[in-house]
Image (cartoon, rainbow, N blue to C red; front, side, top):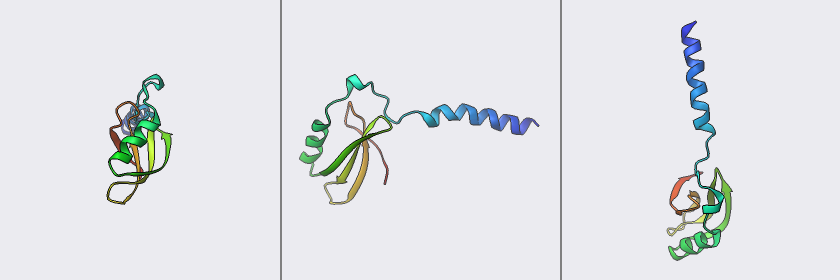
Length: 85
């Protein structure tokens, strides 16, 4: 009886962490998407589309090597924080 209860408690503690957004930046601190696009273009990227996902900017396009990418960026620092690839 203790093992299932313990597992349920652990699952309940993990749930809020799973539900959290990847980028936790207040909307007022977000830099304009045009700045991100210009920064990436200057680095040789081709940006097709930018959306928001998990509180981040999600960039669709091709990186400087020509590889197709779907990369998440922190909207305040433009640091890459993950990928959907």
